[in-house]
Structure formats: structure tokens, C-alpha cells
Amino acid sequence: MCTVVVHVPAEHGRSTRVLAIRDEDPDRPWNPLGRWWPEPHAGVVGVRDVRAGGAWLAADTDARRLAVLMNRADLSTPLPESELVSRGGLVLDSVAGKPPARHPRTHGFNLLEVDPGGTRVHTWNGEHRRTLILEPGTHMIAHDDVDDPATPRIARWLGEFRAASIAEGERWWMPWVEILERSSALESTDDQAIIRDNRPHGYPTLSLLACVASVSDDGIELSYGELTEPGHWGGLDLT
Image (cartoon, rainbow, N blue to C red; front, side, top):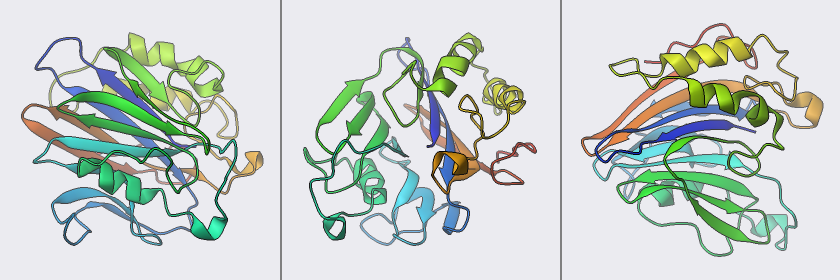
């Protein structure tokens, strides 16, 4: 139940900005932002899932490709569990320029892609795969559709992210982080919370970390930070 905010610029030459908050089981190990993969992904930087070897977020800085994965519920799962593969491989394929198959052999997902061709979200619900090209503006994505008002945290916070000024300079993301801090006044089990404890909803996941990315013609700049306590706001030092 990760959350992603993305700003798509209206003017050519401006940066696409991304804030991604990862919800995962704290007992599932991960490697922080770094270069963890051998060829053919040796040039990729990302957050690696140690168990399956894929990525939650990854970027090919030379190709200016960025991808972020969010889980999505299946409407149906036509394949046996033993025949399904980890969704983390989709992220590595994406930054290599390979979009998801028409019928991926995975559970459902939303996959954000940013590259020189634009910004898009691939969705798969176990029955249908769709691709949505994001229009200029600020968007919010979680486990349902893009900007979906049926998702309580999107209904509550999308307007604030849209109203926030996109800062310039090295710490451009601070207006968005300030919204995260304000949102943490909610209990992390609240449906409207962004910093989350999903266990009461039947998932063993809590908000663990965040990445910010700026994607432009000049390349990709990434920063990474972990919450001091899973599922709770104690500040976020993005470096």
C-alpha cells in the first residue's frame, strides 16, 4: 500500500518530480538506495528486495529512466501461486526500456515510469493491463487508480500536494515533506494516513522509507531516507 506523488511539468525542459513512500513488512530485508545488481542491470541504482532480488524503486541514470512499484489487489489470479513471479522484476525491466507484458505473470500492480518519452502508469489487476499517460500537474497514486477519490489518503491529501509550490534548489522536496509531517497527526492506522500501519487492514506492512527523484534532460537525482520507527513519523532525513 505504498504512496507516490508525482509532478509532471507543463513546460518542456522542467524536471519531473517524484516522492515515493514505501510500505513493506519490516521483517522483509532490503538494501537501501545503491547499485546492487549484476549485468545486465549493473548500471541501475535502486532499493533492492533482498528476498526476491528485484526492486521497489530503480533508475538508470544514463538513460534517464525511473520506475516505482505499488501493489494492487487482484480481481482474479488465473495462474497458480507457484507460477507467479515477483513484481520487483518489473521495475528492473522498466528501467531497461521493457514495459510489462500484456498479461504479466504477477499479482496486481501499479508501475510508475518516468523517461524521456513521458510519465505513465501501467496497471494490472489480474485480468486487464492498462497504461495511463499522466497529464501535466500533480498526481497521487496508491493501490487503486491514479488520483482515485475512492482512496481515502488521496481524497484527503491530493489537494494539498497540488497546492504546494514545487521548490527549486537542492532540497526542492521540502514542501512535500512538510505535508507528510502534517499528515502524521493522523493515527497511522487511519485510512487517510500516508505514513501507515496497514496491519489492522490485514496486511503486515508499515511505512518504512521514502525516496525523492528529479528527472530531467540532464539526468536523474535521487535521495533516500528511512523512518526512525516503522509506521510512525519521527522525521525523514533524505540524503
